[in-house]
Amino acid sequence: MEEIDPFDLLDAEAARIDRFYGGLSDADWGVPTRCAGWDRRDLLAHLLAVEDYTRAGLDGTVADLMGRAEGRGMDDFNAWGVRQRAGRTPAQLLAEWRELSAENRRRLRERGADAEIDTSVGGYPLGLQTYYLATELSIHAEDAGAPITDEERAERLAWMFQFACVALREAGRDDVTIGPDGDAVVARQGEDRVRLGREEFVSAAAGRLPADFPIPPSLRKRLTVFS
Image 1 (cartoon, one colour):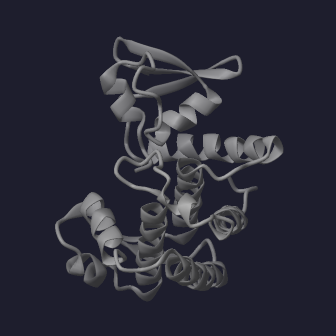
Image 2 (cartoon, one colour):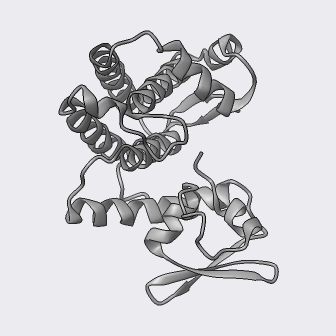
Image 3 (tube, rainbow, N blue to C red):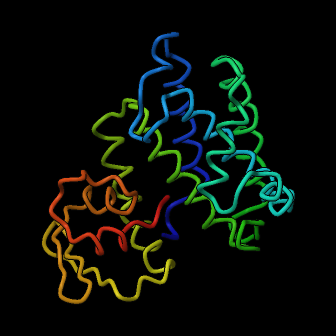
């Protein structure tokens, strides 16, 4: 993915979130999202917690931040981050997210893709982490129902498909093989196999395939690399 600038991707996805949330009416904030139990307000609170995590990564203080969260692991951290903003109004959430997102994106770009950033698993390549951050925003923009043009969707699918393949390898899912099949791919794990269009493959990587999609449960789980 050397030809794709992760900082440009992150800027584009942040701009989409900003436009969408900036145009919501009061009633729109309470609309449920694809994230179980979260409405649009909760989802933006989560994205603000992600910015807290990114800032801590840039500052080298992720362990301190995770230590303040209630519970262990990223799922607990995500839930804690939303609870921390329970008293914020939508306007306050959006203003805080805009400020912190802009500052983090500026610092990430200034430090550069070849630098290292602190994460919950230790030092990590900053460029690769920026791809994950852009992916997080793109998935949650879809979760919230943010509009996207056909051209933008095609561009997003192209880079997300590539990065999903990278993320699958990085996650060590060596028991899963991915092979081309025309405009689709075939994923195999042992005797299990499934043919997925590129958009379906990205949905699988994001854990967003419909519950009734015909895929072996173990393979569905192994293909999920973004959470």
